[in-house]
Amino acid sequence: MSASFGPQTHAHPAASDPAPVAGVSASDTGPTAYLPPGDLAVDHTIAMLASSVRFLLDVTPVDADEQRADFLAGTIEEPSFSYRELDADPDVLDAQLDQVALSEVSDATLGDLLRGKHRELKLQVEMLRARDTDDFRALSVELYGAVGPTLRRQAEDLVGTLEVSRQPGDMLSAEDFLALAEAEIAAYREEDPDVSIHAEVRPDVSGVLVENDTLLISADASVAAVRGNALLQHEVGTHLVTQVNGSAQPVKTLGQGLAGYDETQEGLAVLAEVGAGGLTPFRLRQLAVRVLTVHRMLSGATFREAHTALLDEGVPAGSAYTTVMRVYRAGGLTKDAIYLRGLLDLRDHLAADGRLDLFFLGKFALRDLPLIQDLHDRGILRPPRITPRWLRDPRAVTRLREVAASDDLTILTRGLT
Image (cartoon, rainbow, N blue to C red):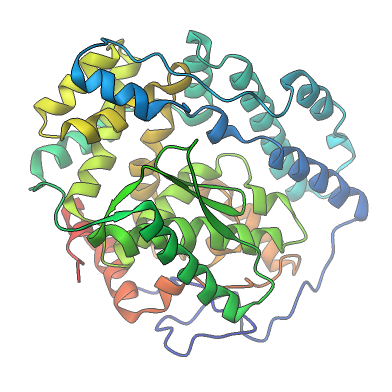
């Protein structure tokens, strides 16, 4: 393959990087062309508004673990979740978005990107208003899409093909995983002392997730030790790396994420798990059953029916609860279908000799790659501040090339070391 897999920082080139980078050279020091100040003012305003919306936190139950115990014990048929108070008033956010002067953006490429992000923010605000209602589900389909026949068939094939044992070996507690995350972040700070990313354990989140520049770990989190490094590369080596690099761009929405960035970000993050040799059959099946659970939710299945379907497919009861909770939260969130869809789209991109380097400049959707390429080619974007550590391993590049060259999805799990 001729694809370029990863970027090399201008300040700290990785001597072991096995894949030369097309388009982002070690000699680049900054933009050579500039956008009009008025255009950047609009971009900065949208980025500021985006940073004020804690969307995933606001649609995640604060009592998921308490409800889990009662649901698994059979004392309740359907969980009744509670959510945190919204920090930002949706009406105020709406009014602020209405004041954004999108029509005054003169650069055509930036204008296209900002109009898309503006529409997405308006939709997210409407979803927050509709939290825990049937309207939320319909809006979620508009934002993240539903499950098409091809994706559903691929998910069913994976569930039927993968040989999955019970989650193996030792488990990491929340504090154990926090220590690993802090060590990983410290390694990036050795390259750039000004990197502003953090990790913390919190009692009011479920699982492990990134919100802006912070890795949030549930106080009740338990991570299989064999998955520890892969999860680090997913969360820190992808989500936080692109946040750092995107926030350093003149176009600040690249740090918050352009419209539809989630799908490509999650696909890229799962590719990081593949590159790190830590995408287990258990994890790949998890991505597949998320797709099937979204489909069942949209087809009218109850929480209990969706949970029973996962038990019938061999998913442990606790894992099945978490999967169903993620999909049914806030009234029905279809986001979990994007992990597998984003992964497969990026695999197709690599198979067509596509490159990955530009994806580490910030957070954006695969469909917007030509627009980002335009900004890059015109000298507007800066080189990345930091390089994903996982992509410096020659074995990671070899694994990605093998994935791109094969139609067998189970090859994604064959790089375990």
